[in-house]
Image (cartoon, rainbow, N blue to C red):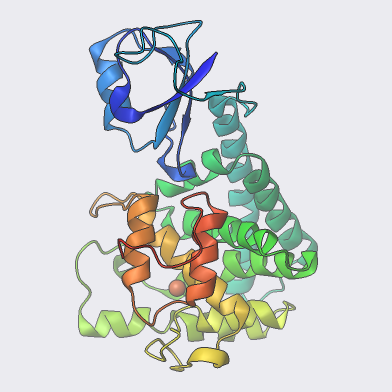
Length: 322
Ligand SMILES: [Fe+2]
């Protein structure tokens, strides 16, 4: 029999069957297990999971319950696949996607044409992985080394944009285009010198200007490619803001397409929750409350629905904490 408990209630002797929370807050090391030692207990308590499901037939219950589920709702057994199997599959997806992406980037960079079938296959592969194992996929892409940052960020934004597009019940063709836009939104960064791209500290004024040119550079590169207009639009405008304070064109409100608004949210969400050696990675919950405080940046209707789509909250309106 399963019982849902809070993280602080976990103790030695319990059998934890499943953990719950926003996808990226579920630790990749998690396995169904009995808590047998202090180290595992501490790891579980220090994690960011929202709650745990314990199996009362295999271990003890919370303090005061004496193993009985009295007064608490018990739950049906979880049917989610084991996370470690999902992680292995998500890693395979990333290996295949990585080599295909290298080919696509090399073509665009060299002035050649991107094979539309190959691009579609990459988007489909990421979208399918996101549909079947979102926790594993986002858990892996969240950990970004310097060398792989742009690749993993592009895959994560592709995954989030297709997921969000499906959640919004957009036309499947549009969802495909959103995925390609996610993959290619930062394509202009391939022209950036590696010392600027990988710089850990604050950029100089001159360096910042070079970085801020990546949407226009990417747009220029994509003008020679047979890609949908939506993809070029996202590439050029993903750093625009609803209040007109973004770049490169300072567009505002209705001038920003729905695709651009979706991209702006997914792009920032992945960036702020990414684990990098030199900065604090926000949890999904932190991103939720802080992104709401970025006044004028995002479309508030879409922002509310985005956080519902990734399982952080049930409410689509501004949280009281923001
Ligand atoms: Fe960008």
